[in-house]
Amino acid sequence: MSHWRILVTHTLIGVLHELGRLGTAQNRKVYARHGVGPNMFGVSYANLERLKKILGINHDLARGLWTSANHDARILATKIADPARVSSRDLDRWVRDLDNYVISDAFSELAAQTPWARKRMETWGAARGEWIGRVGWLVLARLARSDGSLTDRELTEKLAIIEREIHTRKNRTRDAMNSALIAIGLRNPALKAQALAAAKRIGKVEVDHGQTSCKTPDAAEYIQRAAARTRSAPRRSASKS
Image (tube, rainbow, N blue to C red; front, side, top):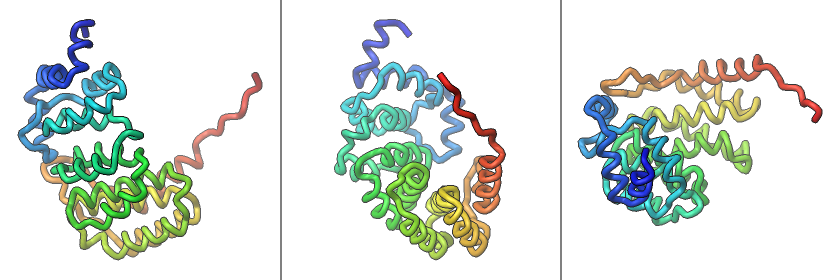
């Protein structure tokens, strides 16, 4: 990318122009099968990552990109937004704009890094809307993997909610609850045992993935395989300098 284009793409109009240039009909066709609406350019994730590296963290630009309502622009917004500067108002406004699982997943990754993650996890996870509910449980799944302040007791309570509600929640929310079940099961041996027992009682989780080859994994099998890989992974010995 030329120096001139790098300068131009740091403006909202410039970024939108570049996204339009990078979009392809084939990507639009693929993304449509995943539920993305017509307001998209069809930019590959490889190109979105390149733009992310060029732009760096640019929170004001991210806000502008989100306001454009274009799918690719919003995905890029989640990549260049500054989690520390995301306000509770930003989250509440953006979460209401979610309309497919692709943008919901990207948004949840950003939301999980913000100071509001724990509080919004609770609010969104209880929501009955498909996309807001999905985000709440995906934020929980990410925090279960990374937030040491979440206690075993809190996660045990979440397992109980998953077991009680997963079959009655909306389609893509069920998929996210299954992801949270897996993440909790991978937290530590005690929670693994509880998650496996819950997964057995839950049984098969039915999720319609539309015109895609995506599948919702069997939670118990996934937890067992992941745990086995962890046990078999070679340990690195500390080397002396």
